[in-house]
Image (cartoon, rainbow, N blue to C red; front, side, top):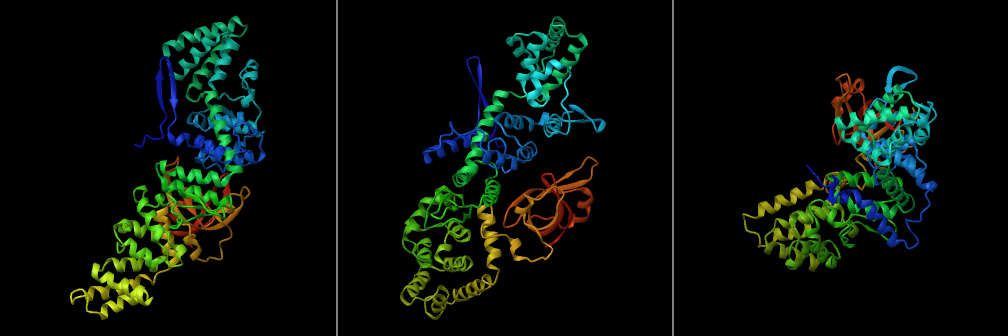
Length: 552
């Protein structure tokens, strides 16, 4: 199990501190870095009522925003649409498991059915339900969260207000409730009820409120934590809204700390496109280890983020970048013809070519890759002859190969193998270049940057792009051409199989395509990761409900 993202606690004397790991504090690090680069930007003084920031949070485009980047955070930011730090703290607290699943309030329109804490909060905030209080004395304590108890501090306030507890006694109650200490809870229950009676309340009311407090133990959260999280979340959202280029660059740089860095990169790149940012393949000439920014405001992949390269090979790559002026100079150095200092391991050289790091030289990747492999098959003497021919006559690698066959250098045993290599090269060049580039990038970078395999197909029924689905109105229907990136199959409450799909095209990625059991049984045969399909469906809240899936 990966424990890098699990918060750890340490004790100093009688106090316990929660230490957040790097993956949780990288957003705070981002704020510091942005403050250094933007001299006028002081995160301690940014306005807390910035419309652009709150609009971004309410849109659900919260990838990379502290505590809100997962699907639950995105969904409930859209549904709750917080406009203050307090409401953002509520969102962060409400997406915890206890609040999402526990029965809290009977649904007015469905007697006998209950809604969760989270669902109740949303219904009341949006004006669909009226707030309800067990007793009027609770209204001043709970009105700020729409009559819904979210925080441990609210329980403490109830104890002091209703039962006359001191703050110390209320804190004991908070701890007892959280840790479910039965013996202590029995003692506190009597004290709570007696305190309520002493304050003029009925004993039965004290029983009811105490039972309600006991049930609260599964979902109570510390408001001090929630507000602190909300503060960092707001500041990272502010950075994303106002400095998207720096934000996405920093998030991409930190992707290597994630459990699935390739998936993290894919999500970030897709969302960056919604902010009109271009993310380009790596470039050997730039020789940037990490993600960089070009003069035209695009983000380029870092060499160390190419799968199979890593930071250990970067020094060698940087040396070869200084002497690469064309494809021939790259090939000769990479293969060791100019000395060991610039020689590259074959997997590293191939990764550079396949990922597009040499595209700036104006040579097709497939052809350069074929020539590299062709030269790699030769002996040192044969390779020396080929490079001499290229340098002296200006011929191509293939032409120099044919000259090699006309020379006396290869012996009889070698000639058939060299001829076969030329034939293999010709066959390798017969594929679809864009399709191969997309496949290379998907494997080596985590995402195809040259486009999507969807672009190689035409279907007149396609009428929307993935990017458009985010803006569709509730219930709107459409047909989208996509490639299936991930399939998650589950069983519904009736035991029938259904699925959630992550799909993408050249504009965006969607992780909320739902295939219910009634549709799943008809389309299971076509569901395969990497397959291009056309999905017909409708928007439902934050999901796209598929009712038909077919070949694109």
